[in-house]
Length: 485
Image (cartoon, rainbow, N blue to C red; front, side, top):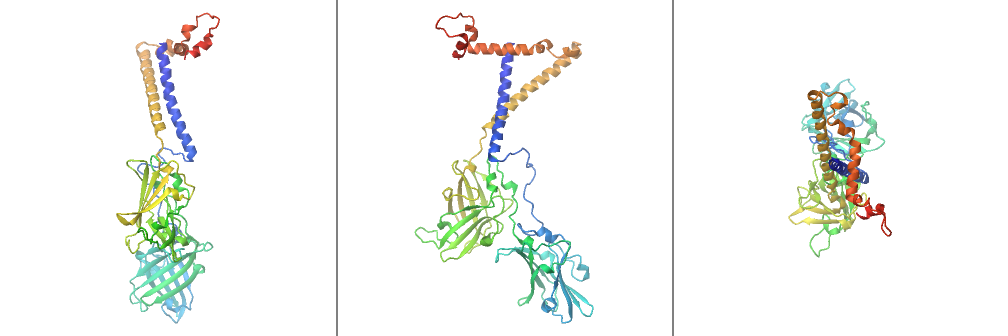
């Protein structure tokens, strides 16, 4: 019986040690990286993509523009060309709505699908309405010329004496922090910079507004892009983008042939993996991109190229045979040689010594080459310690330990339930005597003590030496029992 108790104590202690020590290792690792993951934080059936507006552009506040039924702007009475060239003009207004028709004024004369409606009020008391843009044709564009703001365009097939072939309307929104639009005040005339009408190759109405929501804001992180099982890639999402300077022979427009002087002076890569690269004046062509290359040519001209568009569906793909993973980007800037757009394959390779400073990747960890089989694709190889798989030894020990504890507790529960039922119904025991082997459990602590004492004495050989008498030059039993180990 003593031997049984000693073995049970040892097994339980081992299982508890494995479970708790592994949990402690995981907690320590999480605290060191600053990220503690909890099971079920992302549902298995969920699609954890970043939310996108029903219409509009990432990085701009289109939601505010689409909120009210319509916006109204009063045009100067001197702008007769914009108001159907009416000489007897009293007032001229334009109603427009983003992402939907201008339903509030449509019954007055504009079509049901009108998103831009022209209202002309004459001195004789009559009012004319005409659609100059249909909601179903609305498109959004970033302003690549200025690198700031965006514009929306509409077309209509509705004809008039001034525009017998229909018309189109462009409304531009330029960044201005001080121009905050109030959705409860439809009149935005005070935010209008200018209005114009062109009738050269067709009727074209143009409005240019200042708007705080046209100031670009880096889109929120897509959580599904920053998680990869077996790797800690949380560091990739911390900066707005990663900057690195490769050698000039991999720049767009450079001559890759050996021994040929490149036509580029320098180039740099801006990379972002969990959201788009920030859109700035120096990265005009890189709106909504995950990889952007800034190029300075030998003649001093500068430009930028999107090396791959950002997508919420982009996923890191782990390597099959070795540590590391890769990311494939498509639909970059369209060039003369690459009509369908530039592409980039980013390979993350394991190197435990490759540490990146926040926002910067040392060029010694970077290699950029052309894909010999696809001249439109660049291959960027990045050495990084985050591309090394996380240790799973602690996780395995945790599973084994908890399974062992579960088996022991299950056996004890069955023993108690079945034993108590037999004692109560069969043996007619009552009170504490319904506990099976009540006499044994009553003396359990004594048995445990005796079992552990017997185990200790046997392992240390103390039982063989405790009755020996002390002789000169012989160590004491206390010393003998430790020396015997």
